[in-house]
Image (cartoon, rainbow, N blue to C red; front, top):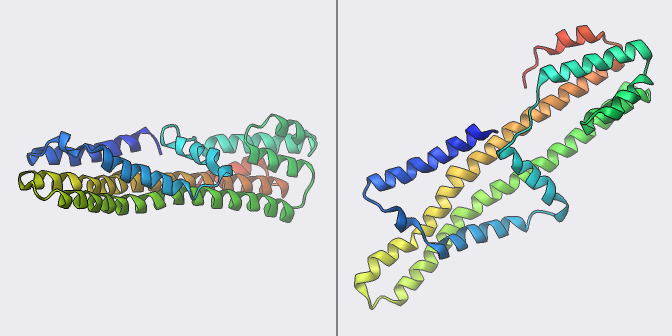
Length: 246
């Protein structure tokens, strides 16, 4: 996900609002603080109940991808694997300890450490695959919170509309204000349906696409490290992996 995705979401919202004004509506009529509190306050709090305290920081870190997504480059990965392979062929496994100590990526650092320690292919694959699957499961659960939010918002929009109608019916003695009050009551429904379908669902889908790219990146990294453990030539490994698509 990137700023382009956010811009498209904003354009989608703008398209709906523009269509509303072209039909003669007033944007001021769409502002209703109680409805916003019911829909957004209730929806966010109901979603937060499902977020364990240990996952709060990773969740907001994942949401930061909405503005600044990480860059997973296959060329950069291949360069790292070639440097690792050359060091391994030249100085042996012990040379990888120095490479691992300077590596910023925790997953690659762990893979290099396993390679330097001389673990067999099966144990390396098992350890690395377990870490990948655990990370993917945790991230899928966190993106699932957005799916939950997308479900709560329309429902709470209906709740807000019902509460608004109850308030309207309690003051039915003023028929001249009845139509305006009913219109205001349905603002909550608009908030819920529009925010879920124009914002939350598209952003959740875009996050999943970025997570899929990350999964392919780290799976390629794991395959490359295992290939080096099996004695693959670094240059041959580069040619073999260049056809992969992130």
